[in-house]
Length: 246
Image 1 (cartoon, one colour):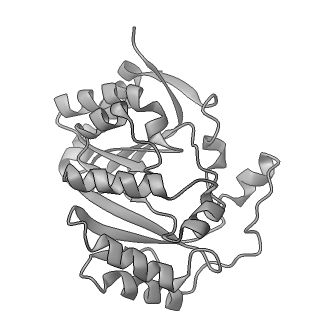
Image 2: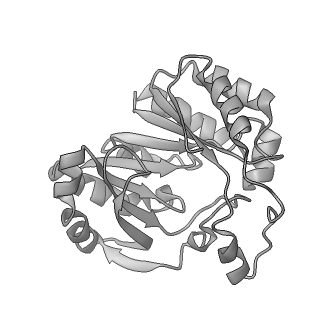
């Protein structure tokens, strides 16, 4: 019997979630409760649209020519895609059969046998590290940092190409000493090919209000260009390639 996946939404020609033109699949469900999340409507794993691997693969293949032309592929994001690792394993195998590159955007909070098998069909992991200070990380996400660091170790062990993503939120994740410690830590991971620095924004604030949830960052400003450059400089200090969206 074909597995059923729950999908929040699809983006057919994405350019922000991995190299080239991407077919981006936003999976439903997430164990984290990030204060700056712009998709809180993905948290509940029982919501979303139901797809079989066949029906989702049919949508993906419509855009294969764009992926081939741009050296792109498919990105599974969320939410947290590893909550539905068994479903994505079917998709990962199908994508590889069709010569389509697979990227996974994850918090690294989940690592089990299904995730490990799925990673065998994965070309790139986009790993979101919310902060390197365990106390700040718990404040930001509601969960512990240690599973993400163990996941990062596993990616290194298996030599899986990784981009680390870091969101700069003024007065929350802009603690520069922690950024320096993260930079030094990542220096020991040759599989980390790039760090993507992302500036906090409030474009998802309306979703929190629609869901009747308190948005704690309503008075928080977007980071200045100067702050983003300072964080970027720290992360570049150990020779990593760092890109910034500001």
